[in-house]
Length: 304
Image 1 (cartoon, rainbow, N blue to C red):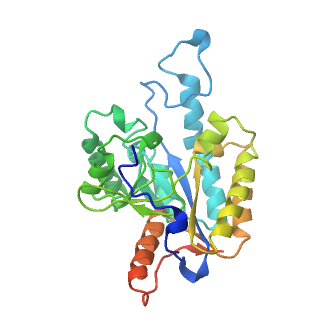
Image 2: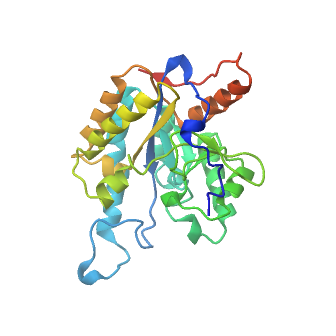
Image 3: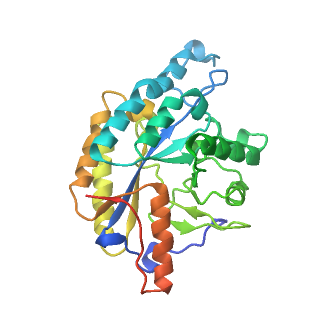
């Protein structure tokens, strides 16, 4: 069965789209800030319990994750602030209550807050999916003053109804569909919803936790990935996502490779560092311009 949520349009058959100021690539950095429930099995594990049993509370794996909130997040933030890059934060909404200092710091740096469920639990396990979306949106709005425009499902998980529910709840873009280098409109029953390119290729969970690569892998892979989309972006713009988790990329032996990757990308002209909402606004303006050539797309971003 073909993709029920998107038209199949090969990238070679699309009209070229252009970024502002002749840029080739829009890069967005996503920091996934999650809350795991100590009363439930851990979302991921790095250390199995003796005899292969599952234990609750799972202290070593819970504290492995919480290291990211206590220490790793602040390392990542220091790197991004030093580079002048505004991240998009994929946020479990309950972090606003349990770790408010983190959300306050994100807002102080002008980072975008994107919905990532209420806590870190696959939406498929929730009894009322719409209620989770509403509670997530409401808590983020109450704390930050703005409702989130974007959504990423915990673990990128969706039900067959998720895009329709998100569109009805006024979410504008989604990141679960890692199937393109450009944004595209999704098929929903009511309203509109756009897919913004996210990644499992430049994502520290697959790289380090699943594939068990050594620490330099993110830098090496980001460099090669960027070289390709930078070349291709000369004819039609590309979007490059870099996905980080504080308990993975924020550890001492990996943080310098995120720093090096950003240094490498910044060393090229024609690159815009953007948030998810800025990418959405640019794409919508750019596709409108196709029908109205006299207009000029407007998108804020950090050009290097």
